[in-house]
Structure formats: structure tokens, C-alpha cells
Length: 221
Image 1: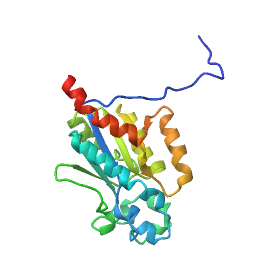
Image 2: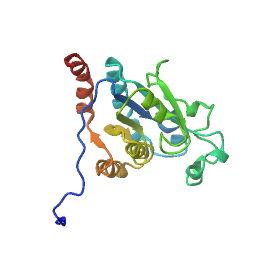
Image 3: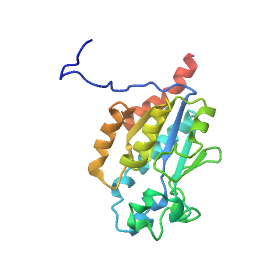
């Protein structure tokens, strides 16, 4: 048996090609209450500026995905009231009286998002987009094996969804500039944690280039 030396890297950095017909884009929780100046987070005094920086990169990803017929799946986080919110709400006092409530404007995706009728919508009430939702069934129905992930928050719902994608043997790729958080100092550490044996973290520029290249690989095949 070979005993690892202190210089041995305990994991491999992922570097995956996007597969034609087997790649999907999952956009996490780009909702008014998280991202809009009139949303619950901002009105509660929380700094949303880092999350807002993800809006244009997400728009660019969605546009690129549409050009190459990559399916787009949107998640929305929320609940009816405190009874179905679980621990999520108990750890956020500012949400006891409102925020992310289904049926409200704050629950809806922000207007900048180009949501189309044939997109998939997934409602969730826990951090992971997979937990108690039909996201896994959607991805399997689409025959996806690689999942591009973007949205908010980097260290919470994005990371949790990437971890659960890994648990289900998908290849998660988180697009760094297309994510954001309320605690910017946790953004890079969260991406590093994803990169350590969970999935790939990729730049927006490289991701857009790779999505564009999908059509070339289809023609070659």
C-alpha cells in the first residue's frame, strides 16, 4: 500500500466538456426578494450588491443556452408561511414576518430574467434544488449528465445544489461570476469547497465559449 505524502493532492480538479444534448442550465433563485431593491432582503437592511452583480452574467448564460438549445431550469425558493419553512426560517429572524412567500411579488423571478414558456420551473423550500422537488426527474427526462449552475446564494443554495447534483452522479459546473451572496467574504471559499471533490468551478468567459462550441461538436458528430 502506498502511503500518501504531505505533498499528495487528495482530490482531482474537475474539468468536464459540455456534452451536446446532455447539458442543462439550472438557474438558482433569481427572485425579487433576494435581488430587487424593493425586495425583502434589501428592505430588511441586507446588502444585496454582490448578489446583484450576478444578474448580467446569468442573463448572458441563459441567452447562450437558448442559442444552442440547452434546456433552462429555474428554481424558486419559498414557502407558504413559517410552518413549512423549516430551520431555514428559524435561522433568519428578519423573515418571520415575510419574504419569499409563495404567491407574492417577492417570490417571483426578477424581471431581467428571460423566462420562456418551455422552460422548466422548480419550486423548492430547502437550500438544495433537489430536495423534495422534481429537479432530478426533469434532468433525467432531459438525459442530462452535466449541469451548469448559477444564481444565488453562492455559499447556500448554489453550493447545496451542486453537492446534491454530485450525490446523484451528475457533473455539476458552477459559473463563478454568475453567482452571488449576502456575505461576499464567503463567495470564494464556497467556490473552493465546490472545487474540492464536488464539481467544477468555471469562469463565465470559458463557459460561454464552451456553450457556443456545443453546436460545432453536434455537427462533427
